[in-house]
Image 1 (tube, rainbow over the protein chains, first blue to last red):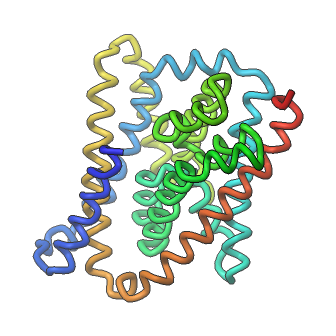
Image 2: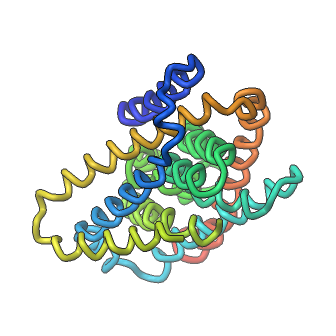
Length: 197
Length: 88
C-alpha cells in the first residue's frame, strides 16, 4: 500500500507541476519517456531472467493450474473489450486496458508512450480500481462465485498486494494458485500489450 | 513492438547473471525508480493536456466500465476452470 501511494504521488506531482505551468519545456520537447520506457522494459526483462523461483514455481504446474491464469487473462481481455464496445468505443482499446490485469504502472506507461495518453490515463485509473475493488469485494466474491473468483478479479496483483486478503477468504490452499496466477499474468502484461496495440 | 526486443534482451541478460542473487534487489529498485520517473512524465503530459483535464469525469467513467468488464470476464472464464479442476 505504501509503495502504491509513493508511485501515485509521482504521478500526481507531475500533474500538479504541469498544471501550475512550472515544468521546464525540456521535458515536453524531448521524448525522454520513450527511452525511459525502453530502460524499464529491459529491467523488467532482467528481473524475470534473474528470478529462478518463477521457474521453480512453473515446474509445479499441471493443466488445471496453468489454465487459471490463461482463463483469467483471456476473460479479462475479452470482457474489457466487450464492455468498451457496449459504450461505443474501440474493442481493441478495451482489450489493451483489460490486458493490464491490474498492473497499473506498467500498462498505463506502455499505453501512454506508444499509443495514446488519454487511453494511458484510462488504463491507470481502471487498473488501480481493479486492485482496490478486489480488496473490497473479495469476501462477497468468495461467497457468490467461489474461491477462485478473487484470484480472477485480482489479476496480476494476486501475487503481492491482494494475496493476503485472498488467502484469508479463499483459504491457504489457494495461496499457491494465487501466486502462480499473479506471476504468469504479470509476465504476460509487457508481452501482450505490444501485440494488442 | 520494439519494446519486446528490450524485454527479450533483458530476459537473456538476467538469465546469464542468474547466479548473482544480489542483483535482483538492485534491478527491482531500478524498476521502481523508472516507474516513478515515467509516471511523473505521464503526470506532466496529463497536466498539460487540456482535453484530458476537461473530460476527466468521462475518462473516469470509461475506466470504471473497463474495470467491471475485465473483472466479470475473468471471473466468468476462470469459473469454468474452477468447476472442472478445483471445486470438490
